[in-house]
Length: 323
Image (tube, rainbow, N blue to C red; front, side, top):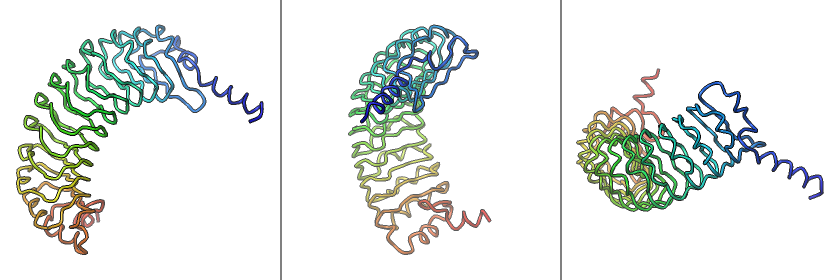
């Protein structure tokens, strides 16, 4: 590298090390929302200057190099804080944000969630793609509706007992081995524990309002303990080790979409157990032994004539309905 290239590299690095006030005229912010997305040339590294916009309600600083969020402490009116895709390691400065409703810290470097019980209005919390090993700090968030802790290093579902109003729980891409700790989450509508290490379906005894269940890419061998989840409309069990479809699924009368591809279903007798599900519209069974039959699609369409889609392709009935 010659001297000119080295100098150019230093200049590019300097352009990236800037404060938020260098990119945005904070004194001229007219409304209650500030949105800044980092570009290839200019990345914000600190949030200095926020004291100039004390009435801000929404702050979005996405895809930058922010390491500290301590400066947000002055934004006591803030309702929506999004610091997605930065380099934040600690939740500094949130103690004063008692009006916060949405907090998005996904794609950062956070290892621990501190006690957030002072955020009494928080409805949505996103801490996906961080470095969490344990669920902490959220148990007293009585108003929380949505929690996303996907793509961390979690091994156990714990510390959620107080989230009695929670409707969505996203835990995909962790290291969870068992589904537990959901007893008090009776309002839960959606749960995802995809791409973990779960080997048995259990733990949903009290989640009677559940509508969407995502358990794909685990080590599950048997469909069980879900016949009471009669409000299910979507169930994803793809990429497991399931060998049969039980007749107990007949109770899932609201089921519309069922992913069971990439398992070990070998017999059409199993598919017959889906006949009572008159509302079923989408069924994925590709890459099961059953699907190797040359007449696989034809037989499924005859067996389940109400289907609109088998695997990624519309059924004959659905195609004819479009013409």
